[in-house]
Length: 497
Image 1 (cartoon, rainbow, N blue to C red):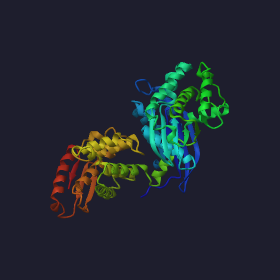
Image 2: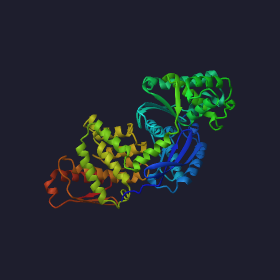
Image 3: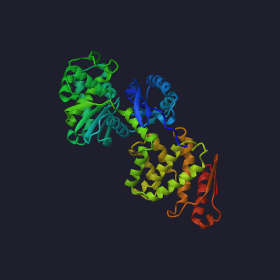
Image 4: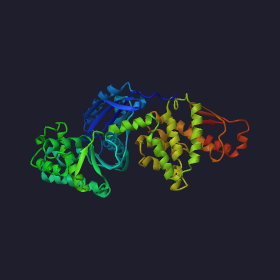
């Protein structure tokens, strides 16, 4: 039964400076924003030098998420997307925090890579502007990372995420809020150093317009315009005047612009240093600011999933083509996997969970990409590429699940490989893997047709029933299934056929 299309959708961005939530009504494929929530949590400020998120910051964040959770507690699972960004990528205890955060929100949280964050930011900006053919440069300053993107229409083609943000730069260079020329120079040099390898890639000669996204860039634009330093968004001349003014002050408490909120004041100078360094390094003269950002990008990505235009399926096909896989073989596997899942619709793993079948189909697309590196142990090479590559649309958890399926589709099956996956995948992935293994065994001879067999799974017992005489006419498959019995027995599953 197809999943009903939700009437409302929500996206939550657990940023390193602020947490944002956007709620939209969805009617006839059209979105209308009906609610926004934002709290400045400063997650990055709670990250210690040895990369642990401290308890007071966790408690502040969880209190915020309980408020957010109340707003979305009645939303269907397919209508909410929640992502964590750089601080949760870096924190060694992020999994422990995420478990509590998911309980507060009532929905799963996905950690995304910096490159995926950049792609989503660009999506949010592109949808908030009228479309044109120009090459756009988009910049977004977060609490602990800054994203740079160049794209055309709604497609980002060049993406980078650098480990510097308004919270981390403010904390590192303006200790206890003290402002000095020396500190500002060090902060801009730090940003220039990070940008230097990408100076040619993102130089202003490579794009037609520069657009800023995020609260920091909006705040800088508002301050420049209301102070009379600029009448056209963020300009290099206006930035120079703003910097000159800031360097007459001794402490961040003295920063006093009507357009600057009190809660943004502690991280404002770090953001200014990053923008000033960016304008100078990339030779930018002027930048407008967009309303769209990561959470809007998340909503449009979610919309794609709802209406069966999931970017992840497009990505898996593109990567399969790039690595010259056998597309016909992948399609055979997918057809057999769909055939098995249809028989197991009441199994907990597949009961109203099209996500399980989706992962199996992506595994079928990608399981042989490792052949491009070496035929020997190709499944390990495939799994490594999947887990560590930049796969558009996939979260870190998605890549982990997919990697384990591919890594386990042949040879020995280890149950421990799935234990660190988030719930329910720690329980579902072993069963999904067994289906994938059986499909590859049945299609070892890439030209044979699938027989009309029956499959039944009861706890750890798997029963296959083939048409009469079929196995006698397929001795290689019979031998492979005999070997599979042994592999599964070692993993404490019983296969009978």
